Length: 425
Image (cartoon, rainbow, N blue to C red; front, side, top):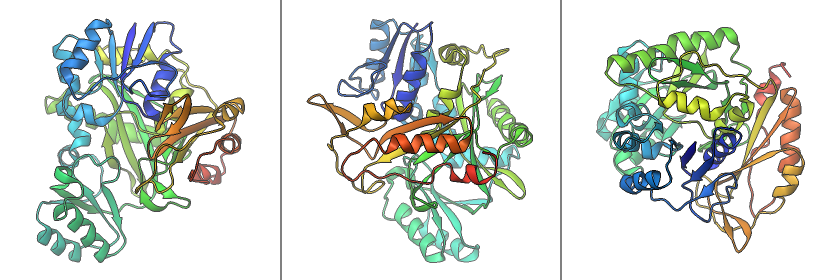
């Protein structure tokens, strides 16, 4: 089969890499552009915001399946337009994508179908939000209702911080239209886990658990990012908890959407906080997590292309996934200054040395310039390594990380430390 992967980050590189292992796949195209450093696919300069051009490209290349990586194209209905054109697509519809593009839609769905989550209120007026903030207990979470590239969630430790976050979103419009409404919700304490499942709207196949590291600095300090690293499996999620999350959260979510006449086809990502009162939903994403994908896909032994096609065509019934029992750790190498302002065009060295150490290196924000790989984004590279236990995987990934260098390279040195500290290494 011929496959088009939409997107150009580390997640999409991992998807291309995994698809290339399938004997059923003939050609893989990636929309990252001709300067992309992704080697597992033919990189094409495709304006994915122009759905007509995407459709024309699919027809010209006889594409059998389109895999949509990032959330933005899904939020504007690319899956709907592809399906109307008779092109098979892995990714939810515009209506289903509101689970991520509208946190208000997701929260109201959870409330309607008794899916456990934090208590919340919705505001579009700063003064009313300010009054409410003074009434609730801090810390409190302030969220832009729409897409904000993983940066629209502020954990406010004080009333002043909460008011400032609300003012930035509602008055200063730092997130534009995506912050015209905000959610102020209860701050949940516990440990986070990422639960991803494939679903065709009827059948559900869980993927391996993982844990992301959102904050930019060691010890979970500093502002939120798109993700600074991940590991799989998440040690806090044992079989009993996984079953509880599936029964209390995943199944009611898919069934609730169906009752709303929304058929969800694709991957559903549930960000969970494991609290003293049980698991509660932090957020939904309607695509593969980034960087969770980079530690989940290497563990899949089954044919990945077959799984994605079965999801897209409503044929998941009876499908199973075989898993590699090794543990995987991903460390994100970021540009200095990220998630704030950062410089681009820094030459990257040591990539082959890291791969010689046995690591996988997925390109998140790079491009080719005069035959050299240079930085072109905030999150630049994802370095992934495995081990028979979490400690070995950590040692292996950081040994590979030390082989890579670029000016002002920044990374966390404590990825998966929480997993190792749980005494399950």
